[in-house]
Length: 436
Ligand SMILES: Nc1ncnc2c1ncn2[C@@H]1O[C@H](COP(=O)(O)OP(=O)(O)O)[C@@H](O)[C@H]1O
Ligand SMILES: O=P(O)(O)O[C@H]1O[C@H](CO)[C@@H](O[C@H]2O[C@H](CO)[C@@H](O)[C@H](O)[C@H]2O)[C@H](O)[C@H]1O
Image: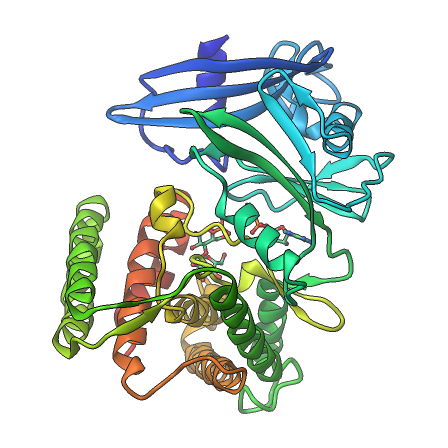
């Protein structure tokens, strides 16, 4: 069984150790949820790294027919895709049920409709999401890090304050790992009439490329008013986070330490992706400027992995999803207080991504390139204007920090793309050439 699981897990989108051999896989926990459905926690060793993943294992299913696309082995399959079985999660949360070491819980006052059937959301990324009817979305965290997931921690606290711009939480599933309560899944309101920011931004970029109008602000799909509103919403979320969780100030010596840590991260990334080496001096310069400025930086809880795929536009509002920080970072780092400009930098990078990614392999790439740059600049500045108008702190001296934070994010993206989508690698690489 463990060999079977090792062969399967290595090819999953959410498996963080892709490209490295699995030395050992063992089953840490195996709980029968209902007949034919087991909840497994797997421990995967790759060299010195030991990671845990969770899996809903269906047994005795038709793996040459209905479940052939999620087959693990003869009769075994990924039961996240079996709506006849996944109803147990919703039932369990509605009833606050304990099954062996698993605890399923609902939010106080949440009335969960347990008649709804689930479908796996198409866009499987770092985690797997089940959509029940058009009402709930239950995100199963695939790679498990001991502790309460920051997404649950933040959304629960903001919902208690009736904060705007979040998807209402309904329930969660947890267990103990290494003796600490650890979030396995979180169920939230499914925004059935919303579009994600990435899809909306791309529609605008496509429109610009197809249109004959000379500038990004005149094309029919102008996105800049949305970027502005997103900036306002981002500032408002930051202010809710600052009001809900502790805030502090990073003193000059701590800023220097942060820069040292980032320099180390850069060197490690160059070892992993040698072509980044050509641009390392650009990143180092941006870091040096922050170290030289030596000013105090206000810090607070932030989103941590903010990009256009993490925000959704409902008919009336921008909603922010996925407050869990960068996948793969240790929990204490993901919960650490940071400058809110880190999120601002993340979104600025995302505008660059949206503008550039349609150009890869495009026959008119050279001709369209200036339009991509113009689209990115327009939306970046609209977002920043909205952020200031919404009360976000953006002072003249912050430009140096913002630039360095963009470089940090681009270095992270280089690693992310090299591991997950190598053909996208040129997008973050271009960030080191842009003069801003
Ligand atoms: N509450 C929600 N309502 C509607 N769609 C959602 C919701 N939460 C997530 N999604 C969709 O799922 C995608 C991935 O969600 P996300 O939470 O970012 O998962 P991951 O951690 O795997 O990246 C989003 O881009 C969005 O399209
Ligand atoms: O959404 P996740 O928490 O899984 O975040 C990871 O995957 C993202 C890609 O889906 C990645 O974001 C990068 O690609 C986006 C376009 O697909 C782009 O909008 C972002 O700016 C870019 O960083 C994210 O970095 C990663 O953590």
